[in-house]
Length: 268
Image (cartoon, rainbow, N blue to C red; front, top):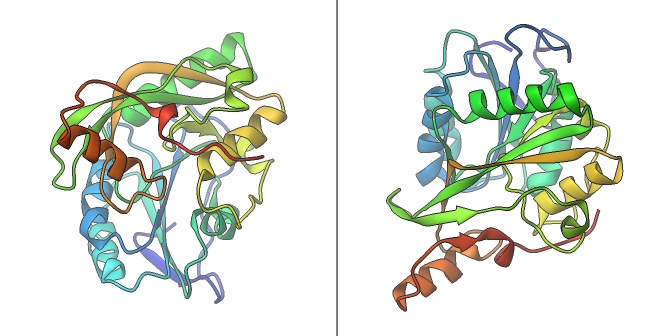
């Protein structure tokens, strides 16, 4: 992908990323970022990707029919990426939801590993490096491990620390009824692509839909019990976690949050 390439989702693709889904000494990692009216957050999200210690990233941003100035913000940010970071920017004419956006750019995912990052969240600088190392090492002993996820820091609208958000160790049975794997889980691209396209009608519980499909194919996950990303709490979180957490804090309920208690479970 060229630096900050842009195409319309309903138009002809103007470029084709180089590379294939094969591991190398320093493998590329695809970072997919769907955005909808998050102009106020997307710059910080992209800056956190730019600050990653892992050098080889394919950053694919889809603006999903935003009515704010998201597109201008995204273009300015992507223009600053350089080195081993490739970028592509797509614009959907109408809002179709996160899964529809991912389905629309699945042909662009050529890196052997990938993650989806919500446009209001942020990665710690070592996120990709740590998760990728853990995934590669885990697959030596268990080739069915295909996703690595971590705990997080909960932040407010201004980016200030609120609390810790904790996931849990991977458990196939527990995943059938509980959503506990966060969205920026780093995945083996092969495992994700083989269960696509996803159901675009699912708008809430999208990550649980993805993980259930992957687990149904025999893939497994690995939990890193450290806060390696920042999860923003605000009144527009689709899962409503932001409103619930902020209300709890206002009423004096402090302490670590177990994320599965807030996220919506769905179907494969």
